[in-house]
Amino acid sequence: MEAASLPLATSRFLSPPAAAASCSRTRSIPLVRAANQALEARKVPKAQRPSPRRNAVAEVKAAPDPVAALTRLEDVLQPQDCNIILRHYGEIRRWDVLSKVFGWMQEHDMLNIASYSSYFKYLGLSRNAAKALQVYGSIQDQSTRVNVSVCNSLLGCLVKNGRSDSTFKLYDEMIRGGLSPDLFTYSTLLSGCMKLKHGYAKAMELINELNSRGLQMDSVIYGTLLAICASHNYCEEAEAYFKKLKDEGHNPNLFHYSSLLNAYSVNSYYEKAELLMKDLRSSGLTPNKVILTTLLKVYSKGGLFEKAKELLTELEASGFAQDEVKHVMAYCILIDALAKGGKIWEATMVFNEMKEKGVKSDGYAFSIMISALHRGGYREEAKKLAKEFEDQNATYDLVMLNTSLRAYCNTYDTESVMRMLKKMDELNISPDDITFNTLIRYFCEAKVYHLAYKTIVDMHTKGHQLNEELCSEVMVQLGEAGFPSEAFSVYNMMRYSKRTVCKSLHEKVLGILVPAGLLKDACIVIKDNGESISPRSLEKFATQFMISGNINLINDVMKALNHSGWRISQETFGRAIQRYIQKPDKKQLLLCLLDWMTGQGYSVDSSSRNLLLKNAQLFGQKQLIAEILS
Image (cartoon, rainbow, N blue to C red; front, side, top):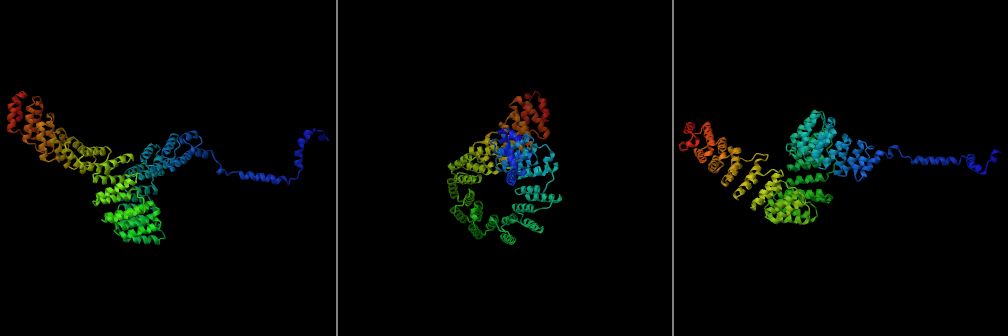
C-alpha cells in the first residue's frame, strides 16, 4: 500500500532492480560466467607482463642517445639490465656506443663481473686490446681482478689481437694475484701459442701446469694442441695427441681431423693423409670444405698436381664453388704450389682458368702469380698482371699493394710507382717493412739518393726495424754521392736500433767521415766503437785529426785511440805537439798530454823533444819541460 503512494518517478527507478530480482536465474548465470571467462582470457601471466625494467631496457636500446636515456632511467635499471644493453651494442658492432655505455656504467657504479667479461669480449672483436688493458688496470677490487671469467675474457681479447707476449705476462701477474684458472683459461692461452715463436714449448708448459692442477684435458684442448703441432711442424707429436684423444674416449670431430691433416700437409705426407681420410669416413663423419681444401694442400705440396686438379674439379662439381672464399683458396694453393715447383706456365694456365670461371680472388691469387713471375725473371709479365689488377679493382690490401709496387719498381716504372704511393695514401694503408725496403732499394738503384734517405728516415720514425744490409749500402752510396752527413745519420739510426749492428759498419762510416772532414762525428765513432776498427783506419783518422781536428779535443782523441787497443805512433804524438806549440794559449793542454803519455808508458821521440826544449819559454820555465821529458 505504501509503495503505491510513492511518486511515479521513484516507483519507476526502483522497478528495474525489483524486476531483475524476480527474473529466472537461468538466464543471468551464463552471462556472468562468459564475462568471467573473457576476463580470465585477457590476463597475462606475471612472468610475461611488461615490467618497468624491461620497458626501460627497450627504451634505451631504441633511444637515439643511449647515454641520456640511461641517465633518465637510472633509478629503474639494475646492473644486469645495463649488461643486456651493453651486450646489445656489442652484438650490433656499435663500438663507439658500447664504450660510452660502459663508461656510464663505470661512472654510476653499475658494473659487475659480467659487465667486465662482456666488455673485454667485445673490445677483442673491435681490435681494441689497449683499451681492455686500460680498463683492467682501473679495477680496484682484487677479487674482480682475479675472477676467472674476467681474466678469461681479457686474455681472449689479447690473443685475438695477436698480443701473445702480453697475454702470458698478464697471466703470470694474474696467477700471482690469486687467479684459479679453469679449462677455458688454458684453452685460451694455448690458442695464443699458435703463432708464438716457441709456441710448442710454451704449450707443453701449460699442459704440465694444467695436469698439476688436477684438470683433465677435453676435446677442445686436444684440438688446440693439434693445431699448435701443425703450425710448428710437430707432425709425430700431433699423431700422438690424436691417438691419445681417441684412447681417452673422445670422438674426434672435423676440426681434429683438419688439424692433423694440416700437420701432414707441412711435410707432404699424402699417404698418411689418405689413410686419415679413410678413418674420417669410417667414423661416420662427412668431409667438409675445410677438410677437402686441406687435402688439396697436401697433394699440392707433395707435388701430386694431377690429384690436386682432380680434387678441385670434384669440389667444384659438388657445389664447392658456392663458397667463394674456399673456392679461391683452393685455386691459390694449387697455383702457389705449381709456381714454387718450377711449373710457372702450368700455374699461369690454372690462374687463367680461375679468371675465366669468374672466381673472385680479392687480389690474393694475383699476388701469388705476380710474385711467381717476378721470381722466374718474367718482370714485364709481372708488371702487366699488376696493371690488369689495377684496372679491374679500386681497392687494395697491403699484400697486393706491396706486390704491385715491387712489380713496378723492378721495371723502373716511376709513374706507376708514384701512382701506387698515392693510392696507399688515398686508401689510408700504412706501409710495412716490405713497402719501405722495396722503395729504398728502388730509389737507390735509380740513384735518387735523397729519396732513399728520406724513406729510411720515415721508416725509422715509424718504428720499423731497418734492414742493415740495405741501409749500409745506402749509407756508402750517400757518402760516395757527396752526402756524408746523411750517411752518418743513417749510421746513427742503425746504431741506435734495438739490435747489434755488424762491426764492419763502424769502419765503413769512418771511411766516409774522415775524407769529408767531419772529424767531430768521426771522433764519436772512435770513442764508442774504436775496438771494432782496423789499425789502418785508426791511423788515417788520427793523422787527419792531429792536422785539422778541433785542438780542444786532441787529448780526448788520444785517450779514445789508446782505449781502442791501438798503440799510438810517435808521428801522431809529434803532430799533436806541433799543433799545441803553434797555439801557445793551449799550453796547459800540452802539459796534460805529456803527463798522460808518461802515465801510459809512451815516450817522446827526439825530434819532438828538441822541439819542446826549443820552445820551452812558452811554458814559463825550461826546467819544467825538462822534468816532464825526463
